Image (cartoon, rainbow, N blue to C red; front, side, top):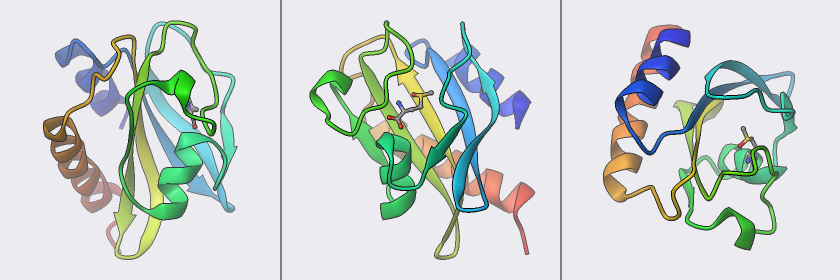
Length: 129
Ligand code: SME
């Protein structure tokens, strides 16, 4: 998973910080990440922040302008937009891919589709029953 976050950030210019949160004991716990700096949000309640929203609703959440979103938990001053893609094993959310961009409205439908496929591959690889 560390290799995956590193590759995503290296290959896509508008992916400035890439992390995987894993569900542990009902919380989102930060796993592998790649970016210029660490986030203080290493444990997030499901339902809290954009990360918690995506986990609770089990759907991809794209935020074009993080500062206009009440739920947003700020991590980095440079961040303008964010995408959070749940990793679903059947009906269960086992984790998520969280990407912050320094570009406003950075994430398109192509990013959602690509990252949803990446999330499926991660679940198949690491969370197969
Ligand atoms: N912004 C996220 C918190 C995690 S950081 O982006 C790494 C949120 O609102 O849940």
